[in-house]
Amino acid sequence: MIKKIVIVSNEKFYDSDGNFSCDNIAEKSLPDELKKKFQIKIIGRKSKFKRAHNLETKKIETCSNIFSFIQKIFDERKDNNSIYLVLSISPFTFLSVFILSLFKKKIFTYLRSNGYEEYKKIIGSIGPKIYNLMFNYTAKKSILISCRKHILMKKKGFVVEPSELDDNWSRNISEKNIKDFKLLYVGRVKVEKGVFSLDNLLQSLNKNLSLTIVGSDKNHKELKYKNTKIYPIEKDQKKLINFYDECNIFILPSFTEGHPMALLEALSRLRPVIIFKDIEHIIGEKKGIFAVERNEKSLLKILYFIKENYNSIQQEMKKNILPNKKDFINNLSKIVSGEIF
Image: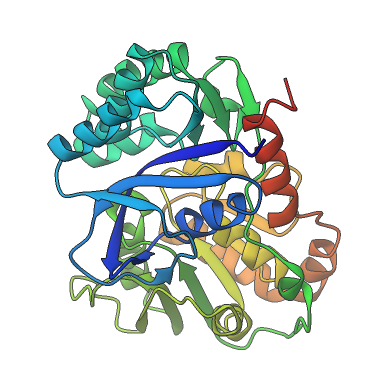
């Protein structure tokens, strides 16, 4: 019997006559892949604007506010055949766990980042306290799945390796030397992603280097570094791969990260990665990632180190064993279907 999974998401989905789109590629690919094995339904938030990625999944219910969201979740009490996959912990998704747990539903909560750090960056010192309350309740009432062991905070749960990589990412890889520094960042332009901090740092460097940002949903005139080019979310895989190939260093300025997809993409294209020490836990066994202090001296030192050793770094990066999307979906499917205990 095919099991039915209801995915509960904080993501915003745009509805165009039953065709849905969203900005987060993981929120598209996860249900689109799972629907090959399960019946999939999504409950999410409503967007007023067209989004970047078109979903194949059609059974999506969107809510315009938290009250309609609660009502949608409450209506799920009548369904006795579904399991629930909650994506991350937010006020919306936390309330869904609370309501579903009242009716003894089977809930899995998939944590993709460290909410303690995110909430602190977004709303200040009270943020971790708020998240802690939501996290502890969620951990008691659902089965946790995470992309990193430390995100589980010593609670019981499963660890998976999310990935969007397929065979196309390992084909026709170019290896080249550095003449000018061409930095690339792929991701959201948000405070917690460190983009504005990076912008200030690059202004102070006063060096001839360029920064390309792919993933902005607006122009972001507040970014001041003169050699910055900003592009919207790129949904065409070939074009996205080309952005990586045209740069020579990938930079991830985030203050907090769980398992960043863009980092895996950069490594797959043999582009050395610079991160800041806030997130050095993501390095693990991977070759070609360099953690620096968030200051001019430390960043410049590693930039020139990479430039002088570019070829040897790329050779080391070829030793990386990177997760792929197929294995990720298979492992997650086994967890939610009860094949892995």
